[in-house]
Amino acid sequence: RKKFKNSEDISMDVNEEFKFYAYSFTEFDFYIMDRWGREVFATNSDEITWNGMYKGSPAMDGVYIYVARGKDLDGNELVKKGTIVLTR
Image 1 (cartoon, rainbow, N blue to C red):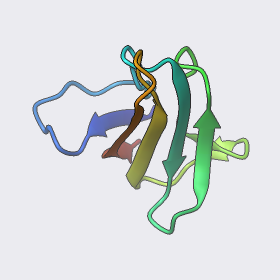
Image 2: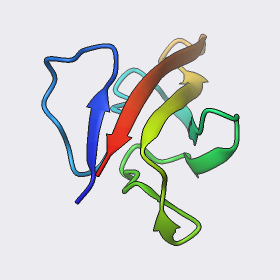
Image 3: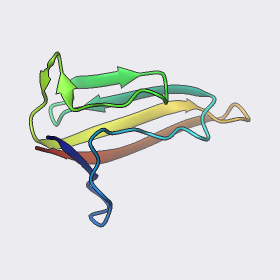
């Protein structure tokens, strides 16, 4: 069983999957990278979640970096970055 937690908010509940809510984005690219900068997940849909898998196997426990890039309703570029913790 895997758990995700936003590492910047320790009071946040744990989740079985990680989803970035892109409410203010009209175009959207989302990436998750491990601590070595290797991409472990990518999508351009805010409907798809990361289940903690990498190439068909469970990803290692640890801190992961996410980057969301896109445009807002006015066409301005947006970039949101953060970290999450994966534990099993």
